[in-house]
Length: 596
Picture (cartoon, rainbow, N blue to C red):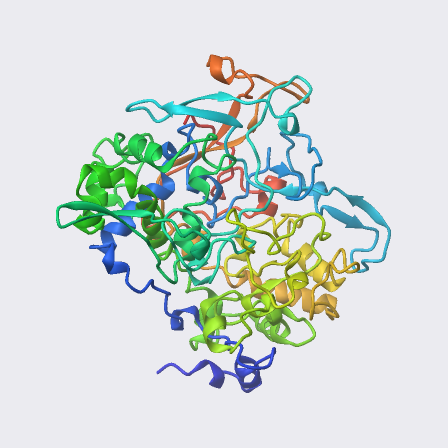
């Protein structure tokens, strides 16, 4: 018979039931006790949720979805749901016009981005302040002309971009100006993206919820095609998913539309240029006998997943593709729940699951002096979760009560975060005091954090030890309003830093570490920087006359993995920086070349 967590050790009784923020912050439990949020009314559109997951996993990993035929959603979320590439990953902050030298390769000495003479004192001399962001490489800066029938690539042309060119005028892939967060456990977030612009209301075509009042779905009713509005709650993953697909930096050439993406993918075999493991936990039954792609067509997958009135007429397939894309990827990502870490096992009653140091780290993590639980609450380890919203009795106009905080990672002028307008002219957050939204970002969950470096929205810390130093010195930019209300005055001893890091590493689920189901996946080629003709001089790709401004890509192979996963663990970002695991003792070491 299992003991309840609060009976394990007397000292933990107060810890596990404490409400460090007052009110009703969710107490710490195993994530298995937290239900996965589901969208009410989904069955209006969806006829088979299992088929929807199959479609969503195909969409998410398919490199053909990018305008270049080489960029998938997974290209920035292949590693524990995040991105740990090293070369051509730097960009200027969102609100900065600074130029970052392209194609740099990150090294251990580049971190932290703001280096102080005394890492424990934010008033000590500044030795380096690079004012850069470790983002994710997307697509080249190109105009969209049209799709090429039955081809994975699209017609387009390079557009000059002085911000992304070297002296010889050759351009790199564009890099996002925020670090890629993990999609694992993102289903528990009320909003998604660092700035929360992916609303929990999905309206069918854009991330911005009720700001988008368009009639974004077409239905066949009583012999007629009719336009309808979409409004699904608990669906920020769907809102998030429709953002990158047409984004001119992440996946799309400028000017591509949903119908064009539909025309392209509907004519191609899903994942047709990528290996799919025969024992893939979702796609295996659909895998083509050749080993590449799926035997089923996208049209067949869509018709199996969606109600006939939204999918079984030729006009519907193109008109509703954004809805298919958003809801299918949401359904797939909702399966990516890591709830079996050693911390979960400990909270379920296994007293041997955590070492003495890790148990001390749990106590220190929840100690009021560390302030960790101000932002990282409950089983999800984030105040931005549905659990926090439904149990705490929060103020809906206060960013902090919604899990958005200003922690002085960077000056307010670098990135407004939550304090921005959506394309419809509405604020991302209706705050009682708008000043509190400036520079505020979503508090990320900490599960698998060992594997998701670099850290913070700017990717400016390479290790969890550097993160603890950051909080131990009460941030890098604590003056001038950069530190938000209620943050600061953190008290951390060296011993507490060590124990909390040990505890956070115990939040890794071994299914994620070894890519076991549901975290298995098809093969992928990811761009890892560009070839250089000479140091600092990019080599131009002359194979296509429309793309003569583009640099030659370098590619790394991410092999297909079936439900049993790999025998070696994922490489951490720090290990990648130091070359640990390049001998094959770690997965995703990014040293095996491939041709996409």
